Image 1 (cartoon, rainbow, N blue to C red):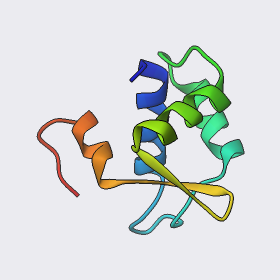
Image 2: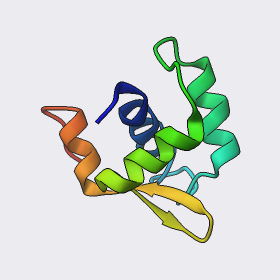
Image 3: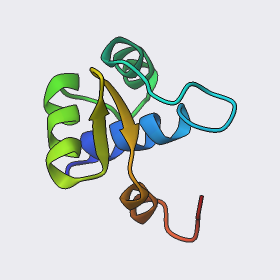
Image 4: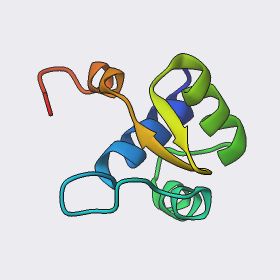
Length: 78
């Protein structure tokens, strides 16, 4: 998986669940990604790649991270 798709998956995981909303929309993902110093790409392509790889899922037009996202951050669990 590309670094951009991994960044998107981590953004989604970090901003959903717990005391945050259950899902996050594309606009909010894009705003957060553009503020990330290492993100350099197309947000739609990165979301599509993270979806294809199974790190995120779409729910009612918004996104949520799957348990697989924890593979991107070794040594952590939900």
